[in-house]
Length: 167
Image (cartoon, rainbow, N blue to C red; front, side, top):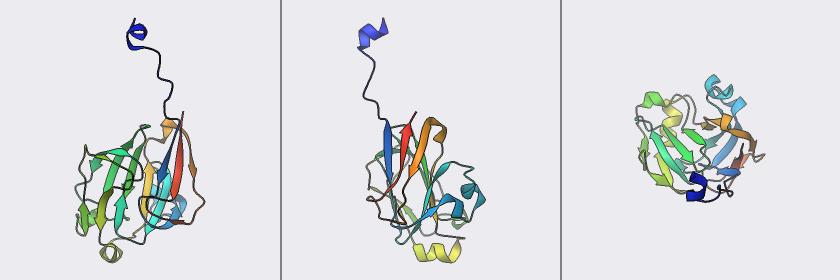
């Protein structure tokens, strides 16, 4: 009965999604991130960037699902249902938001390239373990795989970091 009321099944579902670089800087494989939580993919697969500028932008059109109170991380949900965690620097939670400015809130819809967080890169270098910024797919089990870039340098909004293939 519902099929008759609502028409045929949706056939143009998104099959893959390209996640671009949320920052400009050096691309770092997760295995080289100096934190076992990220290096051993305990939170999920992805890549990291060692930023050369203090700006993080949306790597894809998405909904902001979380902005950490300490402003060092943002969670996004994409059209394919991918949940992305962008974690600015390592051990930056202890900075309690110092040097970070958020430009979005949970529930906001953002467009690829829209500024999410700006941060004081020299301050992070001084006060945190590292500036390396992991970009993690926290629900990767929903996807067939994650095809990563071979680029060694990323440009915010231009470099394709990885492509997610929907199961």
